[in-house]
Image 1 (tube, rainbow, N blue to C red):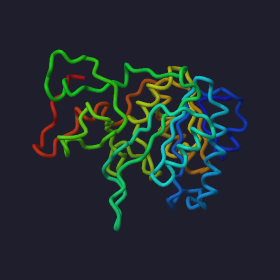
Image 2 (cartoon, rainbow, N blue to C red; image 1 turned 90 degrees about the vertical axis):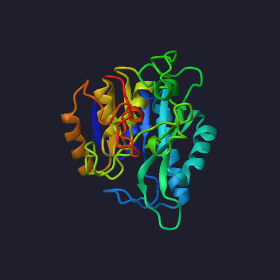
Image 3 (cartoon, helix red, strand yellow; image 1 turned 120 degrees about the vertical axis):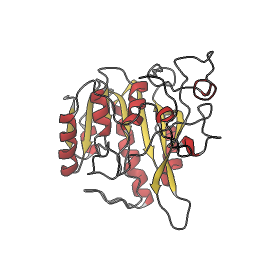
Length: 291
């Protein structure tokens, strides 16, 4: 089996060629079935058809995961509940966390509250044996950021299970003591933006997942490579990677991105947005420790 590879292929066909129990970590950000205009995919299937398709590729992911492997799924509101039930009750995954990723620059709606979040399911095959590293994903605690308490653990604390974009806009909430993660969506004006794909994930978000749920030289799979963020971050963090993408244009763009990427490169975006984001109220940056 070739690794550090990207295949222009339907993931169902590609996954079927893989041997069982060969993947350490899988991250899937599939089409949400909300009518988004993709290059080579129809994003408006009937409900039953969409759910059957999701079960088909999820079943393959479970087959190729190692016994101690981990699967992360990113999904929207429309099918989060159905997929959570399917993954845990039909496919026997164990859900470690149901993370809410909150962001601004979301979808502007006319007759409903604006969409500003996505769901991230953290799933494992074995509830007792799985990879979960902590040292590189710790975040500053409220004692460090707010109170300057010298008794605070200098290594910080583990993140909670909601990730937020702009905590300075709501200073009384979304503190590091709450169930909050903070990562900006990759908006069109961001330097990180590649431009060819409308649903680009932030590198720092994938960095947290890959740091915590895999080790160096582990094999990371993305069945819907999209903009290539999972593969690029895996390469930067010295993991092996394997991706599938049905669009020829997307594959060419991802290949260019991977050619520009080197092992050990810094991840795009602020490593600690909570400590480095500019304050909108005072126009000043929050005080941070020297890097």
